[in-house]
Length: 105
Ligand SMILES: N=c1c2ncn([C@@H]3O[C@H](COP(=O)(O)OP(=O)(O)OP(=O)(O)O)[C@@H](O)[C@H]3O)c2ncn1[C@@H]1O[C@H](COP(=O)(O)O)[C@@H](O)[C@H]1O
Image 1 (cartoon, rainbow, N blue to C red):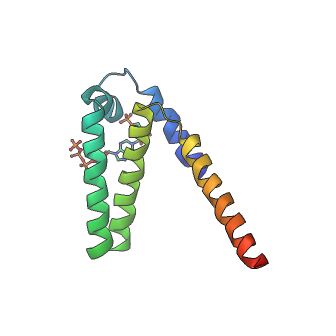
Image 2 (cartoon, protein in one colour):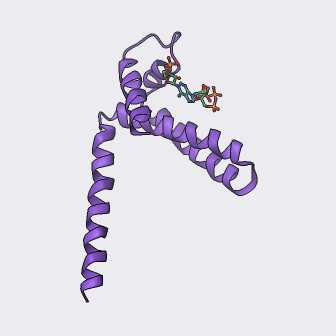
């Protein structure tokens, strides 16, 4: 799963400065951060709507669009996906410690 996201991140980063007519991602980069952020917001809304009213298949498709556009936004800001994953790991470590401490009580 991480491999899939990591490969996609590499492809997305390779589109920076690319031909907007040849690549959807290059077109998004050319439109700028505001447009990418707005697109991510749209995809988040569509994911919520799918979760509340549609099939698992529709939710899966919208969730894929959401993750994809999040990767584009992170790439535009030059924030590596690895940083986000490390933050999640850190939180997991913290909650693991809290659970351990609770068991010791
Ligand atoms: N994974 C994706 C991916 N997921 C979703 N999308 C695009 O995201 C858009 C979803 O937005 P919408 O449903 O609102 O469709 P839209 O009307 O075309 O969007 P807008 O014109 O409103 O921006 C669609 O155009 C999808 O094609 C993606 N476009 C590209 N990729 C991957 O990104 C990589 C680079 O793609 P290119 O830059 O096109 O070479 C490749 O590996 C692709 O497979």
